[in-house]
Length: 204
Picture 1 (cartoon, rainbow, N blue to C red):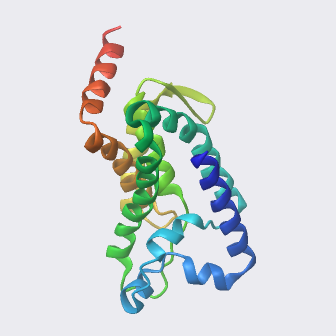
Picture 2 (cartoon, one colour):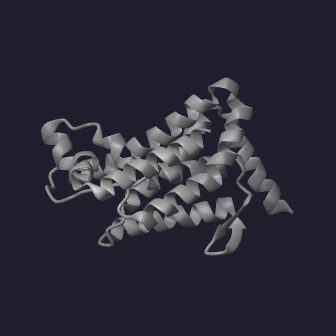
C-alpha cells in the first residue's frame, strides 16, 4: 500500500507543478534559496516533482517494479516496523541525494534540481542488497542485479565528474549508496547474506 501512496502522491504533485510554475518554483530544489531564505523543505519536496511526464513515468515505473518486492522483504525482516523503515529509506534518500547538490551549488542562483531518482535508486539498491543475484532488465537485457548495480554506480560516478548533460548523476550515486547501506545499519547480517549470495553464484 505504501508504494502506491508514494506513486499517487508523487504523480499528483508533479502534475500540479507541471501545470503551475509557481508551485514548481516554490518546491523545486534550489540550493541558493535554501541557504539564503532557509527554505529547507525543498530537500524533501523536490523529490515529488518531475521535469516532464516521461521523467515521472520512468521513476514511478522503477519504484513500482522494485518497491513492492522490497516492501515484502521489509515486512519479513522488520514486521510492524517495515512501513516506517521503508519511509525513512525513501525520504532519507531524497534528502541525502540532494545534499551534494546543495554543497556544490548553494552559491549558484541559476541551479535547480528535481525528481525522485535518488530515492528510486535507493529502492533499487536496497533490493539488490537483499537479492543480489535476481535478474534485472537493462534495455531488455537480463543481468544479475549486483552486476547492474556496479555498472550503475560506475556510470553515475563518471558522469557526475563529466557534468554538462543536465542530469543530476550525484543524486543517483548517493541515493544508491544510501539505499544499500541503510538496511545494513538496521540489520548487519544483510551484508553477510549479500556477500554469501554473490560468492555462491560465482562458485557455480
